[in-house]
Figure 1: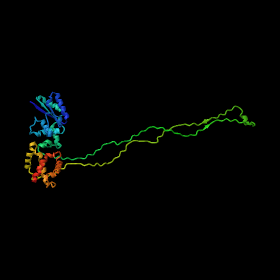
Figure 2 (figure 1 turned 60 degrees about the vertical axis):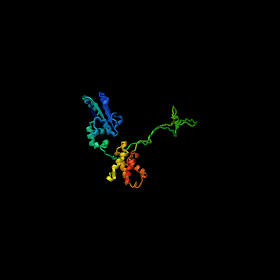
Figure 3 (figure 1 turned 45 degrees about the vertical axis):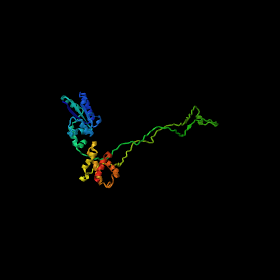
Figure 4 (figure 1 turned 180 degrees about the horizontal axis):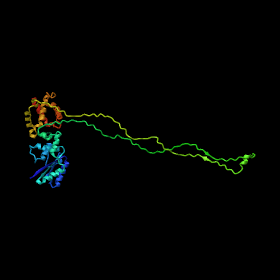
Length: 340
């Protein structure tokens, strides 16, 4: 009897690893199916239905859940929406169950119930799944608030590089040098010899040393200056100015008169749009917008052609992405219905 075992993974890569482990243990490749939020790389058997992750996951589990079991798919859809992936394994024999469960566990499969409890603890509920909200017939306005985060980053603004090298320069100094030279002079003398002269008779030597001064060059090095390279840190306060946006929601209570004749609107829709497969809920805002133009002083007493451009600009501002030509007939019918 064919059974299906499902494994949930935090990352697509882990799901792919599980598929490889299963195939290496003998599970046929066509029995292993992987899906993630990236529809382009998921199992080819699960083409998206057009309603986002929820519809994609529901198609993926089409053989497991009934159409009225949408809430059973929400948990898997939420895991996929959070960036995870789901592996579905088809087995034919009961004996394969432990093998498949072990392979999923080794690849890092998480306990979906524990995951759901963790999401709920952080404030999540099943109603937050976008596709499920659509199934519950809810219109949602996301309330967005921008926050200013100011950080710092270091940027280069140049610097200083100091080079030191040796240069030579010629110098010249003057110095006075003294020299002594021995001179021998002989002069003729004619006088009687004295006793002293007689006492000097004998051998005698007189020696005179000659000297001279020579220039002696000596160089000495002295430190005359120091160049230091460092950084000085200065602190300054810079005021950052920006504009933050946030969504403000205004709730206006509408009376039956403000809502217009819904029956007449539906009748016009049935004859104008229903044949194209559209839903009335898509065009209801357009009918109501046209109907409320009657209370706008700018358009009272004017012909449609006179203010169509202004009405179009306001509509496209309120509903970005909506094609004016698609909803024009509904808006005009809402306006004409109350002006007749």
